[in-house]
Image (tube, rainbow, N blue to C red; front, side):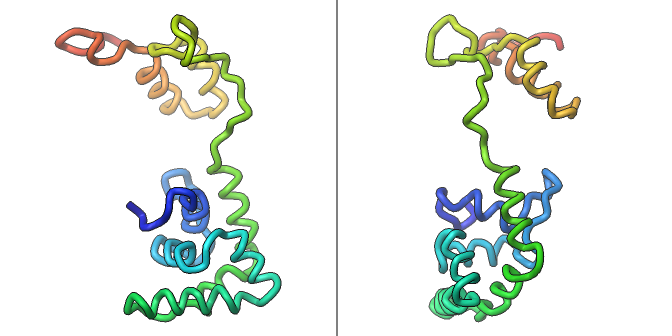
Length: 163
């Protein structure tokens, strides 16, 4: 959908930012340049290493070569300048840290074991407790509605009732 391999999506999102979460991206790097960068130069670890050790020469050449093959403009040097700008790496690293999923949280649910917490619908107080730390009432209400009410197919012809 974005022209980026799935394994690069987090880096893509961190580069371009996410307006819906109020996370600005690296200044001057939008959807197109982020996708081109990752497609042409590979993972950001390699890009940052090239910027550090070769001033971004290899990244600029890779982007220009990639763009030329597709009949596009040569933008390698400008992309490298934006990545090398003060605060660019910090913005990228911050976005990655915020956007990355957490796998170290014990939510006390076990959806793979029938009859245990984790199968929908979930326990409303538990969902409320887990989501409340976000301090976003609309998100809490949405989580409660989606996760604690019976699925639409279980609620009869009219769907779930009340709330």
